[in-house]
Image (cartoon, rainbow, N blue to C red; front, side, top):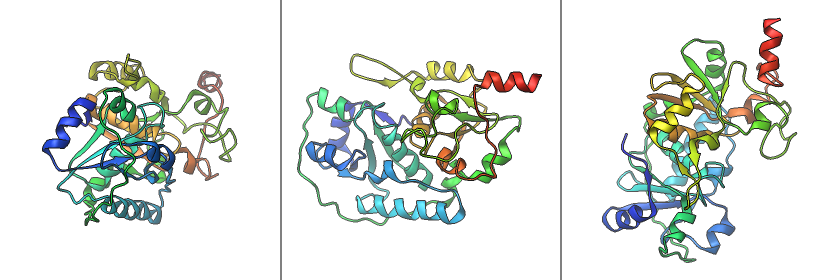
Length: 291
């Protein structure tokens, strides 16, 4: 894949050469306080909670095709997406990248380091709000195969060759909390049975300029710790598909060929009592099974 991540300096030059629509995924207050020149605020990229019923998935696609069209994306422009920094918005710029990829949009870049990187480079910011010209946004149906539903996720439980990868924070993984929105936001705590765990933060490392994605080989080394290779089929999930989008971009950039996401994630899975869960420490779970 062509590199999706673009540095602030590269982006400043790119904007002078290519038609772009810049999308700010932060909340309206942060956007109002200052943003990249010409950037359109689409905070719903982060806030929208999806369900994986056929109706829910159709609504997700329609909603974001409309939102991206309203922002001015017609297919001719490069979509450039950013958040505050790579670890402060739960992967929300990457969630925008995932949504655009799932809809089949041809050209997407993510500002590496987010708004903080742009501001730190001394590049111009503004409080002026643009009036984008609405464009016709086309959905490419076959691009949607990176979006999987609860039924597909359930069928993959215990299936050799498919890694179910949970990238949530540790308190969610061991079932002490149900979500980043509060411990009891969802009715059940735990994880999808048989999932392996790589906390999303592990795709990044601190630098003098703030968090940045690790190199391709570093990301593949992280994956190897849970048995994932470039040829493993990976089904990702988190709470609502934001942190998993950060990992989705990391894995795709590192050359993992078949990565898909259960976008409904724990928010949906935990609310359906018919779906199985594992609770407690994974070591305890395996010891109990061994006994």
